[in-house]
Amino acid sequence: RGAKMLFKAVQSSYHRNKQSVVLQDCQGVPMYTLVVKSIGGRWWVPNDPERYEYKIYDRERTFLARGRYEKAQAYPRQLFFSDTFGAPIAVAESPTIGYSPNLYAKKDHREKPADAIAPWHLAFYGAAATNSTLIHAQNRWVVASAVQDHAWREAAQTATVADFRLGFQVLCAIACFLVALAFDAAVRRVHSAVYPPEQEDDCNPFFRNQQAYGALGPRVWEKKTARADSQRSDSSPQRV
Image (tube, rainbow, N blue to C red; front, side, top):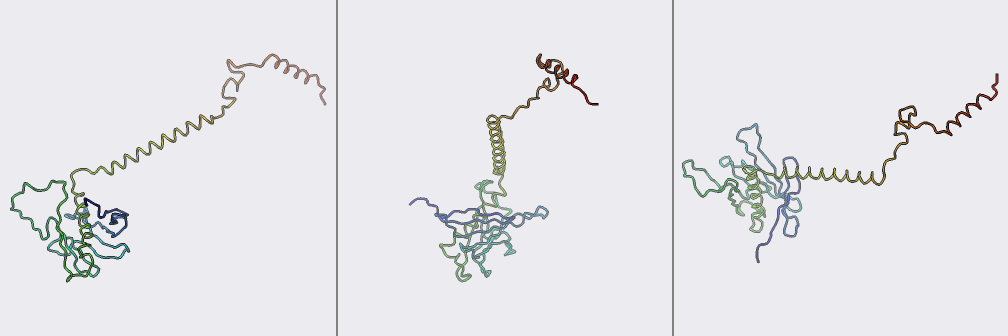
C-alpha cells in the first residue's frame, strides 16, 4: 500500500535533566511515553560521557520498563531494559552486543561517515525471563524507539557539524523585537498626526518680553488708554 506513518515521537516537556517524549499513533493519539534522563557528562570527572536512561509508561501513565546503563560491569556500554520487577526485557549496544574492539584489526575503508548515526544491536529476552507485554512482537517497537532516540541523542553530541538551531532562534527573537519597535514607532507617528500636541502661546521669546530687541511694542490706542488711566488716577481725590 505504500509508505505509511505508524507512529511519531513528540517532545512534550522538559524539566532540568529530564525530557518527556510521547509516542503517538497515526491519528495523534498518545500510546506510550518515554521519560529520558540525562546522566554523566560532568566536566570535572575524566572519561564521563553524557548518557541517557529511559522509563517507559503507557497511556494511563503506568510504569512498564526502565532502560539504564551499568547493569553488567563487563559491558558498561550496554543499555539494559527491565520490567517493574527488574526482570530483563531487552539489551542494546552499539555497534553490536558484546562488541570488543580489536586494536590490531585493519581499518575498514567502508566505515560509516563521521556524522552518521552509529548502528545499534537490540536483542529481546523470551517469555521465560519476563511476563512484560513489551516482549510481544507487536509491542517491541516501543523499546526499539527508545534505542533509536538514544542513538539520535548520542549522535547529536558527537556531530562535527554545528547546530544552528539556537542561533536561528536568537535571530528570530531579534527580528521580532525590531518589528515590534517599528510598529510602535508607526503607531506613535499616526497618533501625533491625528492628535497633534498643543502649541504654547508664549513660545516666542519676543511675546514674553516686550523690551527685547525686535519685540512688538504697544499699539497707539493702547498708549492712549494707558495715559488716560494714569491721568484719571492722578486727578482722583485721595483720602488722608
